[in-house]
Image (cartoon, rainbow, N blue to C red):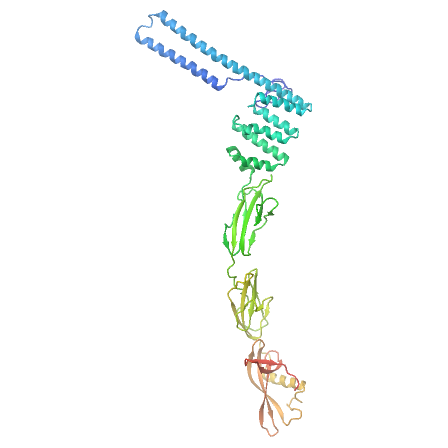
Length: 484
């Protein structure tokens, strides 16, 4: 509708022009119920008249008794006219009342706007409150009243004004929805997001439900589901793709914006029971329903350690590397016994011993649970770089240098005859490598020879010389040579 004075577009239902203040006088249509009642009554009377006409025509000639016939018809016409006049008066009365109410509302609204323009919002609000009292079902007055309260800095009264619509059954659905939207707008302007949450959580109407879906975020999805695991990585996500932030707690009550911000999977490895709760919080600070799962971590036996070097023969310096899952420790033995937590702990790669060696590896978790034992057998032998002749010569030269022999002929100070050194065999000493065994004999001047009982070991790879002995278990052992 346009203002007849200035031509400005006037919002529907408004009875004055915001620009020039001209009142809009509208003669309202009849109320639909009144109009329908009038139509129904007139139709009924017409039907009755037709029935009477038909009944009169059946008994004889309608030209007879003309005076009686026309007299009855005149009476019926007068009745119809009287009834029509009654309904017309009712309609006129209703219309006059509506015109009066509208003119009254327009007057109060105009006065309210004038007071507002003059800077007197309190007086303006008073006019609108009076208009509302005289016409409580006029939603436009209520919306204007809420706006004035908000402009006056009174958000609480602005909200309460709108509740006149949301808490009443007198207004159509579109007005109720608009009132709720306006309340949300007020809450957002004042930063009262808790008010939005409370408002949308208290109602159960279809309108509130639809608004709840718009302003209250969906709860996060949590996977995997509750259950018992050896370890678990908990993933939180928003299936609606909203981008809202997720906050969570682990055994720490209800989550909110002060809780842990979810940025990566929640990894649970230690044994125990974990109650994980999460909420999504939107841009208005409104939290979703809490998502909750319970995880029980029960660690079984840890996985056995992985030994990177397989059993077999090796011909160069080699490091033995062991790897285990996080949170466990590795222990090992080299004497064939079963390793325990009291055995030697693996800290860093182990130098593979020369010769033949046997390793047993095991992993223990913090609870003392043991893995299966992993066995490895190694045979490390360097390439033989020293011949048997070189080994014997190296032995003799070493004995001369240590003053055990007087010269390379094998003479011994103060003793008749000389010593001779004879290659015997090749042996492997555990953890030390491969050695030539050289026996010592003493030869007298008459040519007779006898073993001295001394045995020497010369490394086949680097020619190092040691005395050869036996340990308590009868195994070969190396003895450092010293002067006799």
